[in-house]
Length: 185
Image 1 (cartoon, helix red, strand yellow):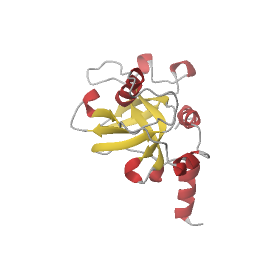
Image 2 (cartoon, rainbow, N blue to C red):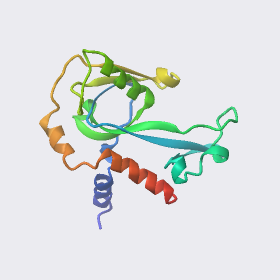
Image 3 (tube, rainbow, N blue to C red):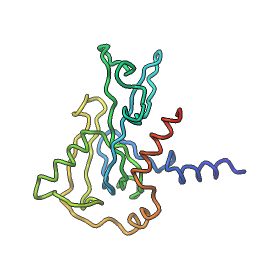
Image 4 (cartoon, rainbow, N blue to C red):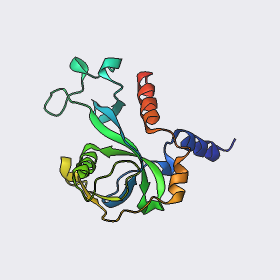
């Protein structure tokens, strides 16, 4: 068995690792959002000097990290889970590769606000234009990400549309992450 081929097959099948996952780089990131996003909450639990992420599969579904079992923030208060929004994007800086992305609330809120602007409103995905997301890890909170829409409405390249045909639904990716956590990670 070729370990490299086995790993590549697993990355492709489960859409993990490899080049299929988008991570914001410092500076400007140019992307096209291809699908509607699905929210995914994560609890961050400190164990000694390490912080471990745990996918929240829902308080109503038995996620134990709520109420009196919620992890504590730096002030010693129960911390709410961090919510990211899972979607597919076209990474313009990486030869238009299709990748799964976890978009922060700030980015999703900025894109959602475009719906109220007659120049940038859109009705469906893929979005009809790219967005530039500037990431500055030295900033804190909402200032870490800024979103600028492109004034150019261009069709998504056919190779990207064709590449989406066999992709797993975003809701399925989120459901599988929740199920995995519910079963003990």
